[in-house]
Amino acid sequence: MISRQSFDAVILGAGIIGLASAYYLGLRGKKVLVLEAGGFGHGSSGACDDMILLQSKKPGINLQLSFKSLELYRQMVRDWADEELDFLNLGGMILIQTPEELTIMEEFVQQQRDNGLDVTILDKKEMKKYQPFVSDQFIASTYSSIDSQVSPFAVMRGYLRRIKQVGGLIRFYTPVKGIKRGSSGTWAVETRSGETVSSEVVVNAAGAWAGNIGHMVGEYIPITPKKGQLVITEKVPPVGKTNLWSARYMVTKLRPDLVQAEGSGNGIGLSFSFTRTGDGNYLIGSTREKAGYVKENSYEALQAVIRQAVDFIPTLRQVHFIRTIAGFRPATEDGLFILGEHADSPGFFTAAGHEGDGIALAPITGKILSEMVCGDSLGEELTQLSPNRFQPKEKIHG
Ligand SMILES: Cc1cc2nc3c(=O)[nH]c(=O)nc-3n(C[C@H](O)[C@H](O)[C@H](O)COP(=O)(O)OP(=O)(O)OC[C@H]3O[C@@H](n4cnc5c(N)ncnc54)[C@H](O)[C@@H]3O)c2cc1C
Image 1 (cartoon, rainbow, N blue to C red):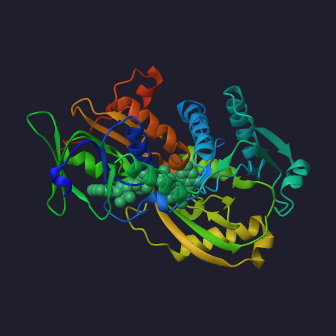
Image 2 (image 1 turned 180 degrees about the vertical axis):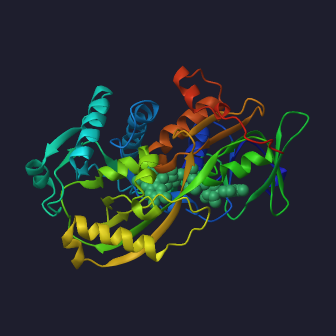
Image 3 (image 1 turned 30 degrees about the vertical axis):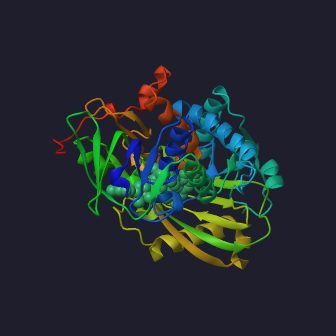
């Protein structure tokens, strides 16, 4: 019975962010309980690509933290010799179709280089050396050797094992339905099955559902789901030397307003991502849709993803598509994730809102969260991520 025990921290959500948070809190000696509404990989961490992509990060805090997170992943590969993490460092290229895109990408690449990222622009001839199967419509590309990937499922499994090894508990199929602050300052977390757990600290790591958890304590957390649909191929030999994106991927991610203004993408925010898993299947995406919490794949989106893939890489006509995925990227209004303690709810922390970067940023998020909970002194720059930066549009009732 979890209700008879007390915990230093209760973490809500066992996605990659909740598990990373529990893992790093466990390393700091905290007794943790993770409560998860569904099963293993129920949320977006079980329905996504596998990229630790630095090229897509805006210069600033997201890029800085991505460097640190990649370093933590490399350390994980060294330290967790017993886990098959499928960590690969194939590098990445962003395909450029038009002179206008080239101008935008040259500017973006320069900003990233100024911020320490090793990335460059390749002309068509150089690009073809890496990507002989890509269609002739592309006039150039970027290239960065640092872009990497890892299996989100394997990382989550590794965190799970280690959380248990230090005495942490995890309960799947245990949705939280209410949170109250007691007079002694501790939090009482109530599950749908009627159990109540008390804890000094509550960590809201509920991804696209983090706003609902905020509501339970009267906090405004503006995170909305941005649906992404992917198609998976059978195992095939490598198609080119690196993983691929289109410059449109960057535009839909960084400037969704431009895509809407153009009326392109069929209203589904279509862009191109093409990554090879450690097993040899390709994950092909994707969409960025405002579709509420409707998780089903749609024929319209899958057709658009496949048509585009075959248009960009004609050899894919010979390949079978064996699975589809739909997941919810947890998106914030300003494109930065949320990490920190809520000023009006001491002991209540949020670690959520990573949109399309949660796999890349999970280790550094968990590590910083544990430092915040332990009261370490941290850099000023992290205030950009504070949950207190948002103003409620209406009164929230806890
Ligand atoms: C198509 C697609 C492709 C992507 N590709 C990449 C990529 O290549 N690289 C990258 O870095 N990121 C990528 N992402 C983004 C990444 O998947 C997310 O940022 C990340 O998984 C978010 O993790 P999380 O732990 O915050 O959320 P989740 O994994 O969604 O976990 C939140 C959990 O909270 C649980 N929960 C909700 N409500 C409650 C409750 N009341 N009680 C208890 N539990 C609750 C949910 O069941 C869920 O399991 C992609 C996303 C999509 C959709």
